Image 1 (cartoon, rainbow, N blue to C red):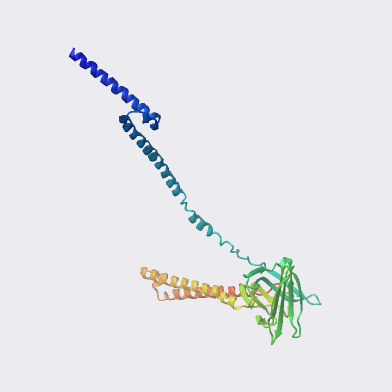
Image 2: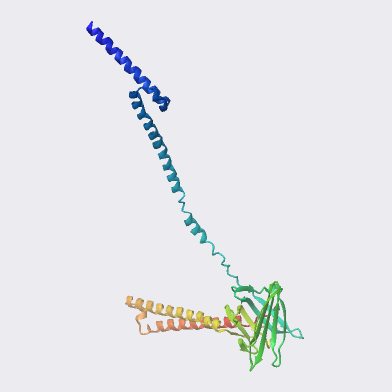
Length: 335
């Protein structure tokens, strides 16, 4: 009986403890402020639960700020590098080079309809207006009107070339059996009432003997004034004593004369090297052949004959070159 009573008492105690634990857990989930009517022991245990709840709220909100910091890293986009790259192609305002001008054939006729002035040339003008950059303009022969005067008895010859916007005047003088370009004036209409004009009447360009022509096939640049430069291409001009409407023998400019010696010098050097090679080949071959008819007393005539033949060939090449060059400098007929 005593054992049964103990078991019953233990069961009652466990039941009471379970009931008390269920009440405590239920009251903490509903509202921590409603626990004031319970016993003092219960209030002390429940008072600890509301302190835990705000700590969970704080810790749950704190990690939210960390992804915001990660978004700050995305704002560090290296846009400055792209801006530097885009600034590099900005200098393309560089204008392409102006092509070479077309060569025009110009002539002035006398009262007898015979040519008194002939000029073949391509003209390019470089001028500067104020502080602006240089401007380059080519003269179009197909859109150029030709006028001028014939000089005789010491008077000047002139060539006037005009287009829609450009006017160029060349004046040639005849003195001491020599002629030269004495005056050059240039005018261009820039639009909006702006006219650019430059002139120089104290020049000594394109000098040659009267009765011959002046020729300069290479590109030449002439500074006419501080703000105006003339470039010529394939130039040949004869302002006096024209016969049969054709250019007379040309007197070359210094630039062309320098090139004229290149071809004969190169040919002479090449043939001289060939002579040396032939002689060396003969000497080597003669040493290798011990029994040959060349071992006779007349064997020394072979290198002499070879040298004479090659020298004669050199002379023929140079003569043919000079004849061809002379023909190319004469006989240009006007159109």
